[in-house]
Length: 419
Image (cartoon, rainbow, N blue to C red; front, top):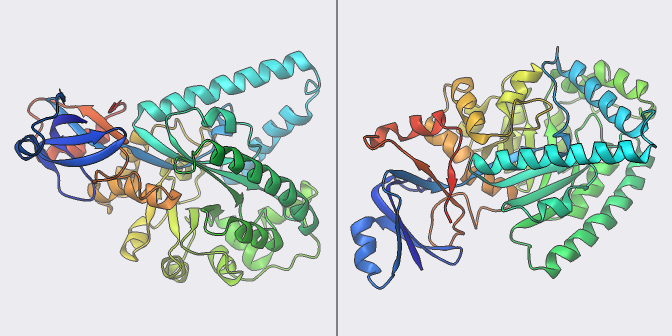
């Protein structure tokens, strides 16, 4: 056993403790509380580490990332449409460009890509993140992510608006996930590494594919980009606008498709997609009826404030989500629509972006709420007996007062991982 002392302990699900201690055995939290009480209960423990002027708290959860986009970075985007076309062109260039078949150049591209991913993973870890929900289109990072000191939920994302293509992609990814899960089980990593299937968005996935994915995932977590740009609402309600033109230009539009005539949230409700295992990402352009549906179905919502600001899609009604009992978490999205993957920077921006959300609520969004949304709520996200010791610490000024703790966190950029 080991005891770590600090000036402050921030458990998240209980009150801040001044002059506190955390007792850890192996990788489990055995106890925590006021220093004197812990010392009187655990007199026999020899390994004691006094961090003195420090704050110990649970590590952060970045509930929505796209590490595969780590080598795509744009200085600006005129709007969501402009950004989407840039993403498509960059990917087409890599896959079908004139140098795509030259082995040496592809090797250099792959090495540059992996180095970019490793830099972003370091950024994630150094900012105190201990768990991520990462969206993957190729699953090429599986081996790398199996080796990082993070809890990982991977969502292998499918994009297919035509029904025939959807079934074809589903069969391939189904076999892939089953093989990955067999390896995960073989190494007893089920509690720290999860893989499931994910539909991209209502404007890019057929109804049949939505249903196949939901049925296959069962009780596993399912992520979906939902109600991000207003054009998505227009497309689902009227079948017209940017996304229709985009799909036609990409030669992937289904001419037999009939618009459901309702909002994206109501559409997924109609096809029985929404439940407590659904993580709806963005949810910017939603109305009160949509919010009520999300609440009734127990859906978790992930907000990505800096990405939404960069893409000019609007501001998610986080205050309404919270007031309606929705589990709201936070994500950085990718560097294709953000400056970095530093969750502390995301929190700092969110504090200004959502002035009606309290500091306590923001910290919960970035810890326990994210853990619950990704299926790790029983093992991380708060300091509680029996949970994993996925804890972080900040070195704080000697004279930092209890009521200044949140100010300090939101002004920080790096922190340490409690060993």
